[in-house]
Image (tube, rainbow, N blue to C red; front, side):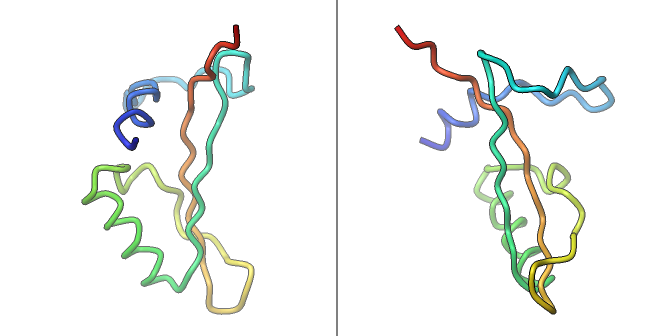
Length: 85
């Protein structure tokens, strides 16, 4: 299942201009959010990297979380929409 998700993502080309970010009929954005202590977020991002889910650098910097002592990091990916028949 993870491989199918990853294979549906367009390749990441460092330094390439970002295409139009507005979702379309052919793709949508999927966001993954990790909220915890700073150490908890970093550990989770690195564990997901070790499992091949996403490069560490593709996550956002640590952002203030909803509760005191918490931070969050966001990963945004594009997902191809399946064409309905």
